[in-house]
Length: 328
Length: 261
Image 1 (spheres, rainbow over the protein chains, first blue to last red):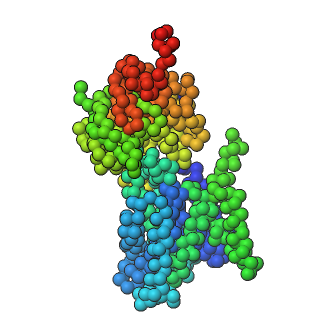
Image 2: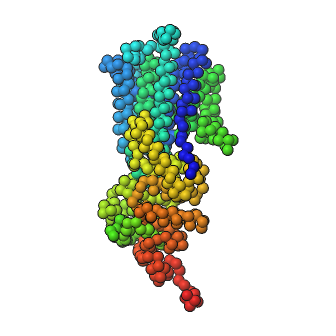
C-alpha cells in the first residue's frame, strides 16, 4: 500500500524565518525599516483575509473597517480609559470580532455575494463614522496614539535600546516585533488550514454541497472564518496604531479595503506565502515608481493588470505550478 | 426485520409537475435497495427529498424511526445518512485524501483555538483520520491516487472517491445516485464488488441507477418508479418477470421473441 504523504509545514516556515531575519541586512535607513514594518503589518491582514477569500471563497470588501476598528479602539482605550496597550489590543480584537459576528450572522445564511455587499456597506459606514465623530475619533485631523509598552517597557520608534550589549534603535525593535507577529500569524493560519476546520472551510470553496453532506454547517463555518479574519485585521490595526503613533481615517477608506483584496488576488488566492509576497509588492512598487511622478498610478495599474492577465491565479500559485510541471 | 428507512406518502410538486407522487416504501437494514425508472421518473428528486435538499410537498421520511422533516442537509450525517451525487461534488481545490477526510468531519475536533494552535489531541485525531481515510480509498479501489490532487484524477476514480468520502462519515445508510454513470463495463463490475463489500459491512445501500445489469446483479430489492409513482416493487427476479415493468421500462417483447423464450 502506498504511504500517505503528509504536508510538511516546517520548510516554508523556516524559509519565511530566514527571509524575515535577513531582510534587515538590506535596510540602509529608518525609511527602509518603516517600509518593512508596514509590509509585515499589511501582510498580517492579508494572511487573515486570505483565509476568508482564498480558502473559504467568501469576499469581504470592507476589511479596512476591521483594521481601522482595531487601530481606533486601541488608541481610544489607551488614551481615554487608561488601558495598557496589550489589554487594549485584546479588547479591541474582541470588539471587532463581535462586530464581524453581528454583521456576518444574518448575512452568511444567504447564498451568493451578499457578504461582499454587506462588508462594502460596513466599510463605507465605518469611514463616515470615523470622519464625522470628531469629538471621539478626531475626525479628519486624526488621533495621536501612545507608544506601545510591553511589560512595563515602552517601545517607542524614537527610542534607543540596549540589547545583549548591542544598541538597537526603536525602529529596528519594531521591525522585530512586526516580523515576529507576522511569523506567528502565518503559523496560526497554516495550522488552521491543515486542521479539520480548515478542510471544512476549503470545502466551502470547493463544493458547498459536499461540505453539507459531510455534516458541515456551512453558514456557521463561513461566520467563523469571517470573524477570524476580522480579528487578524484588528490586531494588525492595533499594532499599526501604536507603531505610527498617529492614525487618520484614511486607514478605514474603501480604497484601503480594495488594496487588501488586491494583495490577496495578486499574491495568490489560497496561498499564505503568496499573499505575503503580494503585500510586499503592492507596498514596494509605488516606491520604485515615484520617479515617474504623475505616471505613477498609471504604471501601477498597468503592472497589476498585466499580472492578472498573465497570471490569473496570482503570482505564487502560478510560479509554483510552473515549477511542478517542469519537475514532472 | 425492522425498516431502517421508511418513506410514507411522499409527494413533491414543482409548479404543476408532480415529480414524486404519493410514494411509500421501506428499506430494511443491511439491504441493497435499488430505485430504477426511466429518465424523469423522479429518482433524483426522491433522493433530494430524503436528504433534505428539497422539502416535500406532503408525506414523511423516517430514518431509524426519526422523522427527517425540517432537517437541513448538514444534519443528516450525524443521523447516519450520507450520499453521493450524480454530477460529482468533489472539492477540486483539495487533495484526494483531503476530500475523503472531509467526510470524517463530524468525528473530528473543530475548536477554533485548538485548530489555530494545532493542539496535540486534535493532531492525533487528524493523524488517525488520515490513515483511516487512506484505507477507505484502498477499500473503494482508488488507492493508487492516494497522494494525488483531486483535480488530477480521472472521472471514474472521482466517482469512487465520492463513495469513500460518504463512507468516511460512518453512515448507517448510504445513498448512491447513479454511481455507474459514465463508467465502462470493467469499472462498473468493480463498482458492483465495492457496493457488495459495503453491504457486507452492514451498511444499508439505496441505489439509483440506470445500468440494469448492475442493478439486477447487486440488489436485494428493486423499486420501479414511473412518472413519480411506484410502478412495482420486488426482488430482481420479480421485477424481471413483472409485465408492467417490461412494458413501461424495459420495452415490450416482440411476438417472435416471446415464441422463442
